[in-house]
Image 1 (cartoon, rainbow, N blue to C red):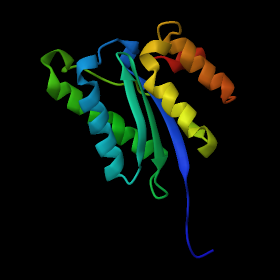
Image 2 (image 1 turned 120 degrees about the vertical axis):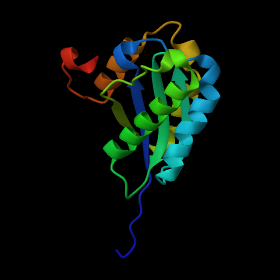
Image 3 (image 1 turned 180 degrees about the horizontal axis):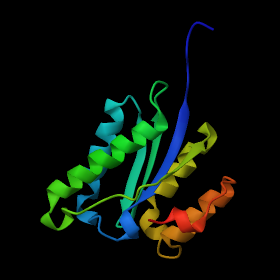
Length: 150
């Protein structure tokens, strides 16, 4: 086949360092736009982005020429740096070292978009840790609780 084609939706989830609730809600729209710009620069189309004070959800189309780990590193490094510039209280801001990345089939994209948009309501009844464990279990990812949270 002479042409390389791919359409891989990735649902990326990562938390703040030690799950500290430090991402200001009032910066959400700008932060999401900034993250989306990083993704577009990598030829990864952002589909839905939302943050809570202690974590982020990013749904995007992975470029066929970028490695997932490189995309994640650039999104986290760039957005973390941007946050540090917005408020002196965020000078020591860091995202956690790790992340979760989950494949999303085309038929489930709209459902995942709704889920990401409704994070604030969702987390009134489920903590981030409970949510993340469910993702790992649903995707049959073995993990060691000692190393998931940093």
